[in-house]
Amino acid sequence: MTSNDHFRAKILARLDELGDRMQEIETELDKPKSKDLGEQAIDLEDDEVLETLGVSAQREVRELREALKRITAGTFGVCAECEEQISFERLEVVPQARLCRKCATKAAT
Ligand SMILES: [Zn+2]
Image 1 (tube, protein in one colour):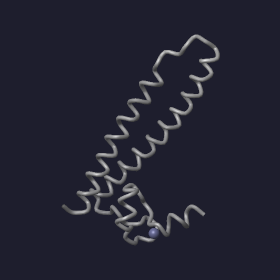
Image 2 (tube, protein in one colour):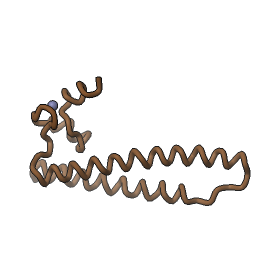
Image 3 (cartoon, helix red, strand yellow):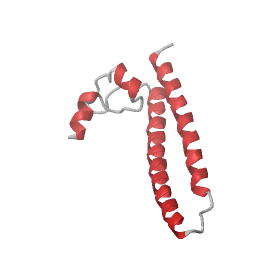
């Protein structure tokens, strides 16, 4: 198994997981709201938390799909900034990483 196959499987598994999670969030958001005013406030807060979770899951899904495209294009694991190979260890943790550790650190500061 090449490392591309390895990461493709990893990314697909992660996408599955995120799909399930977003499904759960949708179900939770669609639940009928309680009539009690105090509980409504709590429901609203919960909804905000859920939507934040939903948004970050969506962003991760988008990044993972882009990573899949890079696998197909043969550019997966290459830093978009300095074009160095991103370390295997980093890709193990963040398979959707576009930047090597050095460039990501630079971009964050
Ligand atoms: Zn780099």
